[in-house]
Image (cartoon, rainbow, N blue to C red; front, side, top):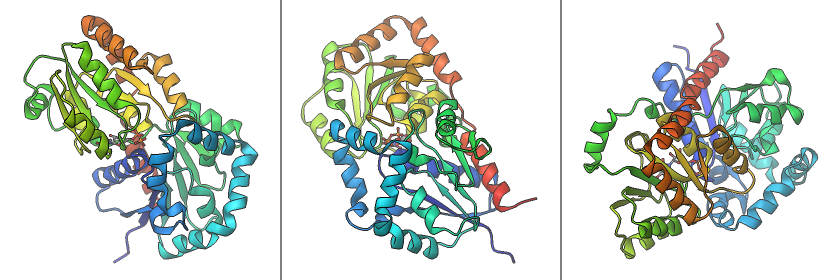
Length: 374
Ligand code: UDP
């Protein structure tokens, strides 16, 4: 019996978005092409990066909380020639690791959902040896690390990300808009809204507001929660602290008077979004794309400098939400939307229109066509 084609997914847990994107594509392969390929997810930082890069996950959560430091590193490396220079300088340190990664993970196609790893692995691979697909998981203000003409195909979430690639030297026939891959569950939740709300125990009539800061629970979420609590609005807060255990503990220690729930890291985001009415969140591309699919009006209270700045403009300019960088602005927007359901409904409809729920499915089709040519 012929061996099934094997797909290697390169990701890392710097934030929650890269893992979610890889999982969404694997899920789509299993749904739409069951049993056709085997898959493997590799956190390349943990498995291969030489010290100190192997600690990228904890470094990310710390550095990302110091916006100026993150912004400096991001902007210094984000130029056409500077981004290449970074890899030229680092190559002697990462060459062995990149070659080990390629040799120890034989596969028929590599799919990367992370900007950092592409140049080293493409350098370590013999060119043309196997397809290398990059799925860009930043929406608009994409870092130039993402773009590399040695990749077989680069798939981007928006027209803006496509233009940025082309302006920076990408061949037009190697880059395509496909959307941000999100789990199929966002458009196929486990039941209709009323049933989901009953299952979550949200029996009262209050609008339900999800409040979160990405997979790591980042940004001044506690200040926002406390401000909304003080405003005594008629709503229920469902606060998702992600992997930020300290944030969860702080919120639980000092009582809140508004109806609320505090959840840590959840695996039921699709059902939660489909059951909720509004979302207050960091401008992460994964969360925003998921909120579009669930048709949620979006209040963005924080963003990572650099790669998430364009996401804010995208949401605001298209009319799917509001940029509210202070707790007061979050409260004012919630009050406006709750007191004016027609405005809320209009923003919700716009959000829904921006959804590209087929992205993961279409990526799965492309992968299959590349490993199983007809
Ligand atoms: N997420 C999750 N459970 C949580 C918190 C977040 O599954 O408790 C998921 C969320 O649905 C999204 C991802 O983590 O898919 C966060 O990605 P995003 O790009 O929004 O931000 P990042 O965490 O990468 O900064």
